[in-house]
Length: 118
Length: 112
Image (cartoon, rainbow over all chains, first blue to last red; front, side):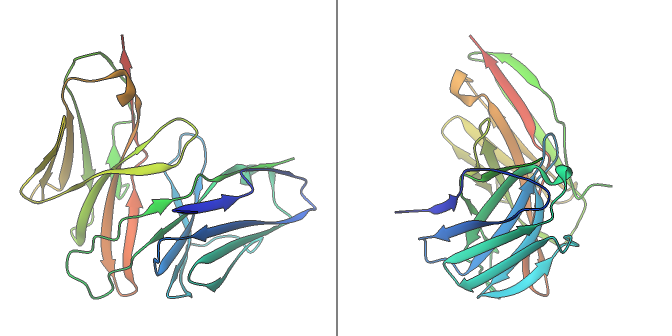
């Protein structure tokens, strides 16, 4: 497989359920990201992992819990979500040019996991 | 003020038209700039990077004005397949590396 793959593509869950979203990148990148995209809103950065270390957590509620076991895999664990958490969750990866020159840092996105919380 | 601002549109243009989108950013520490394209219910994909000297890729031309802190995208000879949302993206340098900020996007509809 190539690129960034996300599973599941669609998920419906109740507010008391626990589920996980999975992301895998086959690009040899060293940074991975979780974004949330709600209708008519810009992409919201949730978490960033550089070299497997979490470097950003943008005030995301604790009901979202990321896990990055290695540089190719990223999970988002979900528990006791709210209906307003229904959105498209996009995983992305990039080659973080830390200390680099141009700061290219181009993101490659997965197809997303569309989450509906009932 | 939003860090990256775009006119949400929608822009409705006929095939063959030329259309331009602008984007402004507020952080002067912004280092690199991009246009991404997002089709309906799909993920964003890189359309092109934006260089200081301006750059062209086929029918698409991107410009950067650092002094005024805006970026533009010009599409010539619009095709039906150009219908999508165009996202302005800015990378800001911070102590942890780079922070990528997305605009909310400009929707384009190209009509036959």
